[in-house]
Amino acid sequence: MDFDHFGIRVVDERDKKLDIVIDEGLPPDALEVDLYAQPEGNGISGYVAATGRSYICDDTEKDPRYILGIDHCKSSLTVPLRLHDKIIGVFNIESESVGAFYEDDRLFAEIFGQYIAIALNTLNLLVVERCNTSGQIAASVISEMTHPLNDIVTSAKALMGQYIGDEHMHEQLDHIIQKVESVRVAVREVARGTRTVLGTGDVKADAGDPILSGKRILIADDEANIRTTIGDILTRYGCVAMVAKDGFDAIQQLENHTFDLVLSDIRMPHRNGYEIYAAVQRQDKTVPVILMTGFGYDPHHSIVRANQDGLCAVLFKPFKVDQMLEAVRKALTGHSVDAPNQANS
Image (cartoon, rainbow, N blue to C red):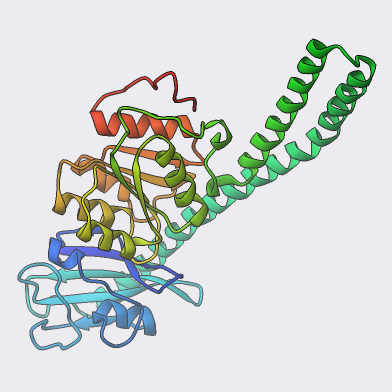
């Protein structure tokens, strides 16, 4: 096929938004256009995603469905990414020539689209399997540890009864009981997987940090526990933390406030990680961005695309508090910095 641009969009099941996974030749203005899997008002891609019907546009200037694509685009071909009976996205190609695509091109693109759909589904299955496996292992560990830990606590309390009046022994035994409880908490945190930050119990109420003190940081994540936990931790270290519940909220906050650093999840409703990164870059290229993702899941290739433009760092959930703080300090200073003694993380 003779074409000058191609793009692959996938349907976000949460809001039916068509998120760009891969594109070549798409101008920045086109990236700003939100398209949804709806037959009207969302361009040719929205129509194809909603109806499952392929669409050949012979002349973009005469087709009312066409929405901004490559500069000087004259014709396009859009096919659904079909997985069995489900439409999971669209494959779109464009040309600078009028009438560049024919029925043979449509048939070829539809076959190719099936392979793309299978590949995307395989990626999702691998991520789900990794997540489930991690959860199963953690659950098994908790089950196997329950009785031995209970036995340790029972024995420690029994010894306390035998050493009445021995304050030193009581302190030692009480210390053992506290450590057992910390083990329980740590394992429970791991079992919660990507919806938690590890090691939050070790953060002091007033940790303090001269590097972080007063820094304005935006935390964008659609998981309430993640954004709230990170916000609380950074606040304890002296930051002015603000949170965003999704991509749209994050964009609004970026337009209304200035920040020293942005931490954003990669997969969120309304805007993905790369779109958040691009928005920060448009506002101020000197503001560092850290992206977060679970199990290395990057459905829109946000990490690769942002890395090419100078992404600061990536945190893979579940991450530890000290890992996050190290990444934040490095992002703010431009180099690795040791944590201060009073900031026990």
